[in-house]
Length: 323
Image (cartoon, rainbow, N blue to C red):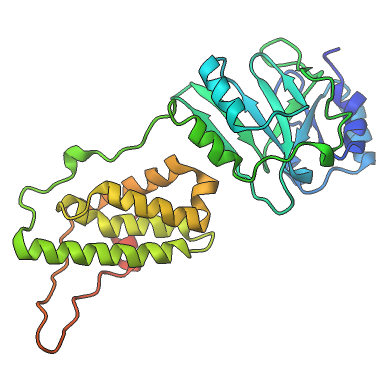
């Protein structure tokens, strides 16, 4: 059976606690433009029946995120990569297959925020995808675009296992996968060939500016760690622009800024949601924008204990280094 999967199985999927979707036959595209609405609540039963009658050949899909349901879509056939994935993520009793690889199903713990994430060794070298809220996946026995029919790999299926009975995914599943697959994923490294200016400061001036830079870095990264969602990326970029000049003048190594930024983004949640490579991409882009920026002029302390000039505000850095 390759046609009419939605009409035949959507209500059973609904009864099992999932949010069914009609899919364009032979494709991975939902037939409904507003399909993402059903990640918060499934469509009413009468609409399920109505869509089934309207599109009798529609394939069957499930909206992920509803009831905490997530999926791990594994595309790789590399034995070492598969071993790394299986070691990082617990097995699931419910899995399906398409043209290649497999997709395993889990649920997030109540209140857990598990982001979708793509893991690849390079362009067109996908390893796996963590699919969460805002995504969907096609279910058996729907036809696959490449020709074969989706099939269940396990005795249990989403039609027989209630959503709340799926195994709970680790809250840090994205981080586990990123760490496990690090040997195959491209590493974002700062281009050291552009790191130093021709005549960096020396002697007393160098020591004072280096101490000032380290102190300012510690203070600003502490603020980044407390930055709420919605402002984290912009703040990270602004700080990268702010401290990039110290890299180019040879006062701070890019690795020092990386370590501080990654720690701060781990604290504010950005690292978990966007991943290490995305955080480093923003960081390095900001550092590169700061090339050629002048160092601050520090006043010498006197008997009155004059304080050094305060580093530029973030707003100035954002205006000067717009993405």
